[in-house]
Amino acid sequence: MEPPAEVVHWMFGVGFLFLGLCLLAEAIVGRAVWRRRAWRAYLWPSVAFLMGILMWPVMVFYTSSAIHMLAHGAWAQTMMLAGMAQLGLVRGKLKNAAWELTVPFALLVSGFAFLIHEQNPWLFSRAAFLHHALGWTALAGGLICVGRAGRPRSPAFNAGFAFTIIVFAFLLFCDRNVAPIFGHLSPLAGGR
Amino acid sequence: MRAKALAAASLVALALPASALAHANLLERTPNYGSRLAKSPPGISLQFDQGVDVFSNGIDVRSSTGKVVTAGPAHTADGGRVATVSLRKLPRGAYTIRWHVTSNEGHVLSGVYTFGVRVKPPPPTEAYGASGPTASEYIVKWGFFLGLALVVGGLVFRLLVLGTRVTPAVERRFYFVTGAGIVACTELGILGFMLTARDAFQLPLGRLIYGDLSPLAQGTRFGTAFIAMTLGFAVIAALLFLAWLTDRPAILWPALAVALVLGSGLSLSSHSAVEAGSSWRSETADWVHLTAACVWIGGLMQLAIVVWPLAPELRREAFLRFSKLAGALVGLMVVAGAYLAYERLPQASDLWQTHYGRILLVKSGIVALALSWGALHHFVVRPALERGRGTGSSVVSRSLLGESAVAIAILLVVAVLVDANPPPKPTQQPTRASAVKR
Image (cartoon, each protein chain N blue to C red):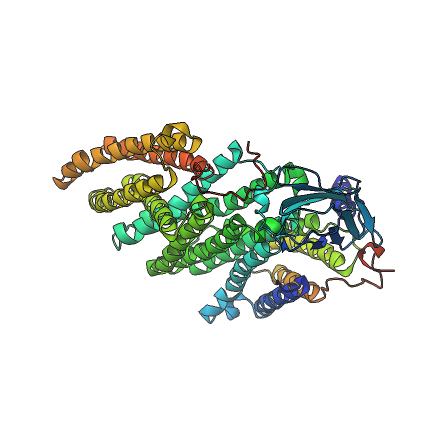
């Protein structure tokens, strides 16, 4: 009854691509220019928040493994948290700059959840490879965002964050349920 | 140098578990969970996406009385991707399958489900050998009910009692307290689901992380309630956040509507719905009882920890308005509760002779204490406030906290009561596959 996992990953890939392109545009033109229209400031935090909400159905309907369910729950909560905090900061409801750290927190928790929830080694299959790559990308992105929280106007940190999210989208679009990676598919996954 | 070594060690530590944790996923079960078969199946077949090993007793199939009905040892086929076991010819009845296979890295994957031969099988939570609930589940359920009361009661209090008369400090704490209720409900809902799965699987939580939870999530009323409530609380969280962000309390109305629907979800998955002889009247009464209790307890806590300490100028009006609402809520609670007690306990002696009746007596005793406390507020504090006295009294503040504490104690008894089975009616024919209860 549920759509294949790869289709769900592509759908989230669309969301991450949009989010990443918004961040990249902001990094290129600078925050001051990007926010000349007030609604643009709300754009990427709203997308992150919405994606967090949409992750909940994934969590409750894909329960073939408890660890899988818990990992999706972690992503749902961290994405909502990061989106909420950013929206609060943009709106002026939150004053403390420490709320910026919710983004690296979300990425670091998500990265660890990816690495722990993927049960197979890198070259087991394409999905396994992508999960590992996503985990390490999120961890790297988390470190970049720690720097971004300290220097929010730094073009390097902003571009790094944007590319992290775009890489996320690219990896999600590459996902197939059973597919080889670099021509390799474990015999245990159906390869020869 | 040390930093580089530390970084390298961290990378290795992170990379290693990934290669040591490979495990298989169950793709298909034959027969499937919850299926009602017209005739005895020849065997059980579990198809995985990877090769697995299975011990000779790795697929255990039992009747509702616990009799083993397998006809030989379990073994693998199709290159280890299928674990299978033959069955004897099964007579009419419900059957429980518990399986354990070993994935290529040594992790043990598990599952439990039920099927019936010419009968509707019970859910996995009532499979043969399933146990519970345990003390930890009661505590988790208690916390869940408290969270629900904070959400439902908080929203009603904010919309109906406070209305437009709020200060920024009251508004901030209202969002904090209600938000805490949502977080509690979400996290404790997930934990409660895992603990129930543990009871059905009969495995410690550490081994349950490789458990197949699909039959529990998608084949039981409890699982349906878990799905609905998890999604519902995500929606409420979003609405509450948007109301806070945009300073538009009107957004709280749809949040309250969703929260009230969630209360009905709890009623539809509770013993009111599953016991034989239940009707729409008992389910409605259960929902009214639960909702009125949540509004009363949550509102009381808002009054005690939000309005009283932060807004002296609002105390009098908030108290008087909540007092009117509380009277109606208590009336609803008592009427619905009395109806449910009448429905579930056919004889008065069931009150002291059955487990369910004794818990109900304890609950009634604590409720009586809370109601007496409420009556004191109604007949002593309220007239004083109406005369313009008592708003600065710390005695009232402590008294409100005391009544809140008693109300929270009621929720603990409720957590125990909802998992207790009312005494069976003479015409009942239970379909449980198991009589085992801890």
